[in-house]
Length: 339
Ligand code: NAD
Ligand code: TYD
Image (cartoon, rainbow, N blue to C red; front, top):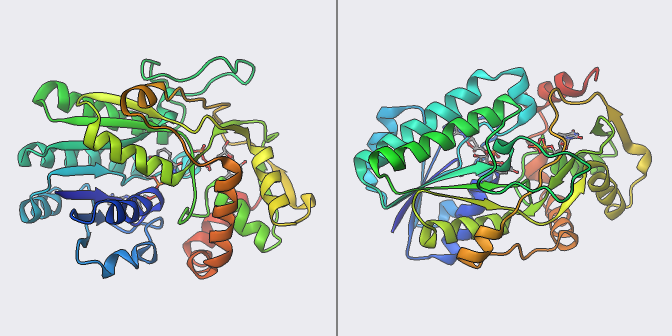
């Protein structure tokens, strides 16, 4: 089997490549990634030594380049992780989100249709469902929940989902879509809550918490997400959407406090800052379909996953310290400077 994995120099795509090279040593993986600020070849260092892996610096909106690789490699499966993925950046610059997340997805769908792949999998997010109220813990997103997006990020991801499902209905392209909750784990770019809190705490810098810190996310360890996608592309039904979640809803402030405690730092580092525009209150996922149909279940308890993640950031300082210069510094000052 040959799998094209896009966005593999990023957080979840990189973890998925390591997972698949180990779990399916007879597969060949071709990674397409344009190496935006979020792409990091260091994440793929060990994969690059494996003859079953090939990296191509390709922008998924570049139709000629995508088709060239598909022509050369004739992939059986395509898994699309490539995306602009940060809500805060989408508020400042929505255009690039539409370009990569919508046009890029359509370009990959078209190349997949021409090639006649066995499966095109779209990696989506629970954010396409909008948010849930804080005072209704009984309410959860199911695959039937209407799409009701809040941010340019989630709107562009919803556009991509709908295109993928349209390619199934119209052209019978064997498509699947997964909508996952917030991930955490190794190789996570330090603009997102958990890695940002860890790297700031390790350097005794302020830990920014938006608003009152009461917003709720459902956190899933990244390896559990990778295993879910592996199951869907091999055993999931065509034309179907699968929700993936950790059954682990937590308030942001409790996440930050937990990290502070694990690292033995002072809670005085916690700094409340101005809220995010349009900030989604709560995400809560019903992953019952994955559990019933594919026998998947989140296996990593948060207590264990967060310890593992913190240890990874302590043992891999070089990976994140190199990121903190340059573009990141400018982004950080703009984002948090006078908030
Ligand atoms: P990330 O930002 O860490 O990585 C994105 C990768 O895509 C980077 O390597 C980047 O270089 C690449 N990329 C961006 N634009 C590209 C383009 N035009 N052409 C080729 N490559 C491009 O993102 P992530 O957190 O790993 O998320 C991966 C996917 O999972 C995304 O589709 C995201 O929407 C989805 N998702 C993420 C989460 C989460 O918690 N991080 C949760 C659910 C779903
Ligand atoms: P984030 O990691 O950006 O993921 P998403 O917005 O896709 O859920 O943010 C997770 C939550 O943490 C979200 O409610 C916003 C909040 N947050 C902070 O409070 N401070 C921060 O510095 C960041 C980046 C996020």
